[in-house]
Length: 265
Ligand SMILES: Nc1ncnc2c1ncn2[C@@H]1O[C@H](COP(=O)(O)OP(=O)(O)OP(=O)(O)O)[C@@H](O)[C@H]1O
Ligand SMILES: [Mg+2]
Image 1 (cartoon, rainbow, N blue to C red):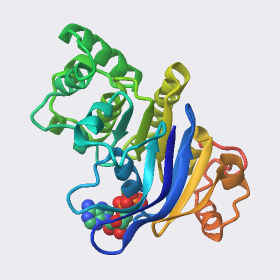
Image 2: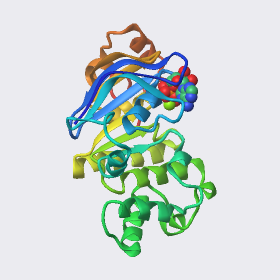
Image 3: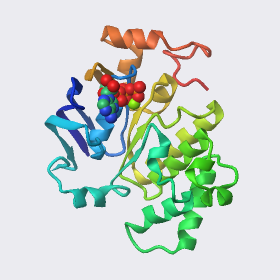
Image 4: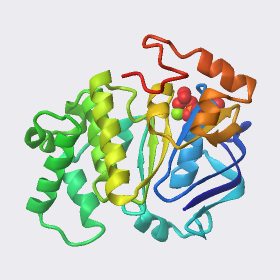
C-alpha cells in the first residue's frame, strides 16, 4: 500500500531523514520508535506532503498504491487527504483551524468527500468522540481548539483524522498527552478502525508499550536513518542493533511485562 524508497529530506542543514526505505501493507500497523530528533516526524510529514516551507525532499520516492506521491500535483494530493491518507500531528493544534469549532472541522472534512448534512456529520462526530472517551461530545463539537485541554485536543485531532475512514492513518505520538486509561481507549479506537475498515496505520510513539500492543512491524530510527526494521517480535524481543537494545533496556519496567509480555496494562 505504501512504499518509501531510499527517502532523504532536509530543512536546509543536514539530512533529517537519510535513505529510509520501508513499506506498509494493507491493514498493517507499523510502529516507528527512536530518540528525539531522529527524523520520525519528518518522515511522516514527507509522506503526508506537509514538510513545510523550509523542508525539501532530496531523493528517493514515496509510492501509495503504486503511484508516486512526490510526482502528484497539489490538487491531486489534496483530494487524497482524509479519505486515502490522514494524519494526526504531534502537535494536535496543527490539525485545526483556530477559528473553526471542532464540529465545523469534522463537517468540512466529511464534506470534501461527498454530500453530507450537518445533522449527519454531527451524529458521526458525536459517536466518534464518545468512542475516544470524551465525556461531553455535544459541547465539544461547539468548542474551539483553544478551549480544549491538551488531551482533549489530541483526541479531537484523532477524531478529525479518522472521521472519513482513511485507508492509511499516519499517527505521530497520538497518545502522548493522555492518561494511561484514556490511552487504552484511543488505542482500541485505532485498532477498531483497522478491524472494521482494514485501515493501515503508521504510528510514531516513544511509548514502547503502545508499540508492543499495536504494531505488526517495527522500525527504529536514529540520526535520520532507519537502523532496524522487522516484525515486532523480532525487533522488541531480540533486537539486533545495539541502539535498539539500549532503547528497550531504557523502558521502565513498572509492570515487569516488557520486553517479554507486551503491553503495560
Ligand atoms: N520545521 C523544521 N525546521 C528546521 N528543522 C527541523 C524542523 N523540523 C524538524 N527539524 C529538525 O530535523 C531533525 C528531525 O526532527 P524530527 O522532528 O523529524 O524528529 P523526531 O524524531 O520527530 O523528534 P521528536 O521525538 O522530538 O518528535 C531534527 O534535527 C530537527 O531539529
Ligand atoms: Mg516528532
